[in-house]
Image (cartoon, rainbow, N blue to C red; front, side, top):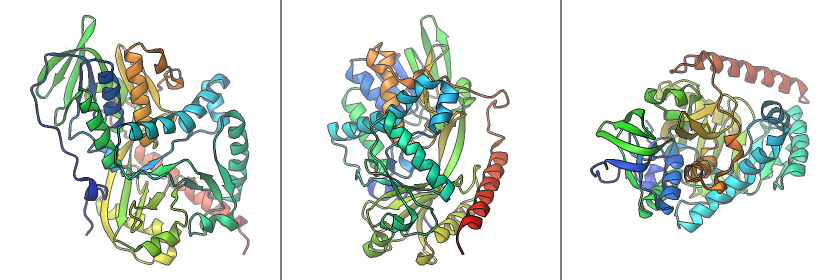
Length: 435
């Protein structure tokens, strides 16, 4: 049986909480959630001389921030027409610029400035497109995108895709050369060290039980007592607790399941990824996969289900998906199997802002490695009243639905819908392929 911990912890170590210290009686800012968002915000606030306390219910970074697929680069989730329809034409350029350019530049500078050793490699990403219809639409979308912001990308037709990934399952794809990969556990540990070295206090194993107004500030109740805060920033994304109901109602926590194979050897892995690219795909099942940083393993993730399922069922689903993409591998053995919760907004767009005086930054919808530190930084600047905190994601609203009151009871129905869409797309694709 594979280890049920993330492969990344093999070299990075298991994320642990900093030594416990007495909580202060008050702080300028209390950050709830010490993953990539909260730690980046804490760093920025501490650099400006504010007293900052970042709290996490578990060990800082032990959840999605250290358990994801380790890909960077960002990008927009909705197509350009959908962005214009949802947010207005005036928002299009800002969303595209921040997701494709600004966030990517910010996190690369953060890693460089703080000298974070996280196996960063700018290898590029290949986005596999499921049908010729999707390929043609993606080409038109890319032409439009390049006219709005200077994105580096190119289309790769099906007859050339083996130069990117050794599979015939896609109808071609898009290469984004400035994307890349890293070890997310080393990454979040480095951001935590950067925040602490600037003077932020980071404490794990300290759940926040309630946040209430107290004059011009707030009282934050924790499992270790209460304290006063001038400002509160919620940075909990897919792990938002019931105590923060306004944010929980606006986030849909969707599990993502991952495996790492036993070492396959550099020759085998290099044959699968000739350019060392990260790979993601367009279907609703949304597989994403990559070579491990040492080039010896396949790290593979996907939505085996949209609700928690037994580990054995998840690994069997991922094995089936791997076999459909890389039949040449046969039955590979897994060394690690794990899962984490991503946080989706209803409009598939990140959001930063203030609700009844409480700040928030969340809703990355699968692009957290790039967007979370970037928007944590932006939220911190807004708290400081710095005009550089301006971001289009403050103007995007933060929608909910009347029927989402807490636990995401609707996810099994969404899972069924996505499976039906994938099945229909498979049928359409197979009918159009030459025999």
